[in-house]
Image (cartoon, rainbow, N blue to C red):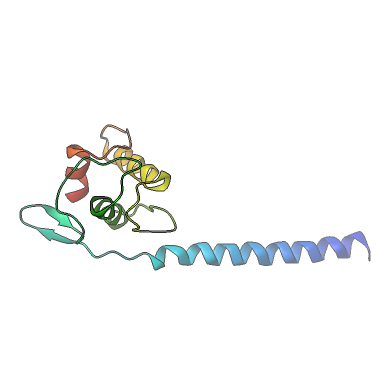
Length: 120
């Protein structure tokens, strides 16, 4: 087999792999759906937790699920597992991106200020 034919064959396989990878990653966000609603007393609420309790990396539970759902609602990915209730690296990264976009202190910690912006 000539090197030109082999190169063309490899290019075809590589292009097919790239197309498959692109279509797979394009479908991932559609699988993560959240439902949040506005409330008079609390602002946005996604059904997990109404408190604005301090939370950061390593935490878990309903307050983290609420955080993750709010981040998704605002357009930030929290990783491939979506709303799983664990504040890991992907959730921390999403929090920092959100804080940067809102012009508030970027520390990856969700306290009263960040909750306020998330619920607005």
